[in-house]
Amino acid sequence: MALPTWERKVRIFLCVFGLFLSVYALHVELSRESNPDYRAMCDLGESVSCSKVFTSRWGRGFGLVQFVVAKDSPLNQPNSVLGIIFYTLQMGLGLSLSKKAAMFLVFSSWVSVAGSIYLACILAFVLGDFCMVCVSTYVINFALLFTNLRRRGAIEGMKEKAG
Image 1: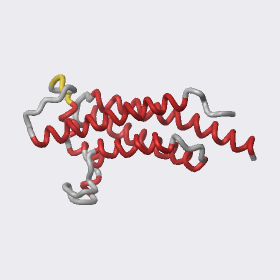
Image 2: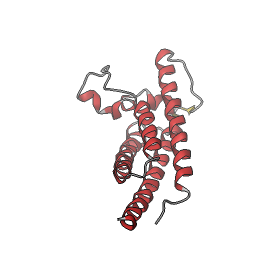
Image 3: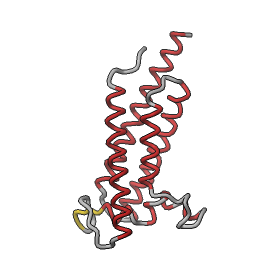
Image 4: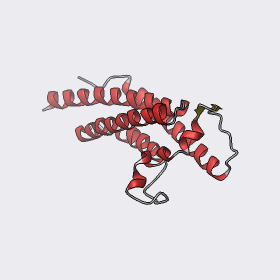
């Protein structure tokens, strides 16, 4: 069994799109922090506002890190910075045919999907907001999980044939 032919193109598309959204989210958050009157392109109304979400307490360290370290600690990074790291790792490790890399890609995807579900619940039930950027990253994370599961299966099949 070989790697699916679509896998590389889909991975690059998803990771580049995820990186773009993460960088945009960081831009919106930093712009809003320096100028409270800043209005982002993704702010379409009172209940459709990405800047409201990004600048909420859940926009940094999933709203959880601040319970372990100080709110202004370097460890309490915006979620968008975590996204930039995640999508960069997904793209870089996606170049490897290593079984360990494939396992890490699947594991990190499961973590990202769990984080997406958690943040989607916060978005809907706590903030009562709709964030197009956020929901787009959730879709990307689910698509990367599917891609990584298929990749892991193909790599395991290749290793069994070779060994």
